[in-house]
Image (tube, rainbow, N blue to C red; front, top):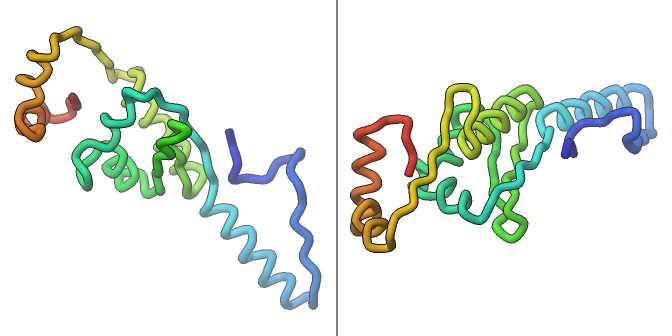
Length: 141
């Protein structure tokens, strides 16, 4: 849902004061709204660790840096909130959805494995996973 812009159905902000102060306040409010556009993306429980693994190098942090937006994950609602300038937010949300669901040349593949095989693929403290992701740039496990 779009929660960052004002449309025909939105409430109004009423400013009162001197003409000079109103002009300044109006500019400040409009700039704030412009820089704080918000969209939310619903994710699945299995997407959460995928987005957060890697700490500062996690997919969610890389996307935020790449698009110049704030991305935050609400774990209780399983929602990623994107905040920033409208065009940047929309681009980041599009890329996030591609990462999670595929599309535009990006693919998501699910491979059934046993618990034992999963441990081998991930490795101790994620070492094998990190090695595979480094070796095959652009692929996330």
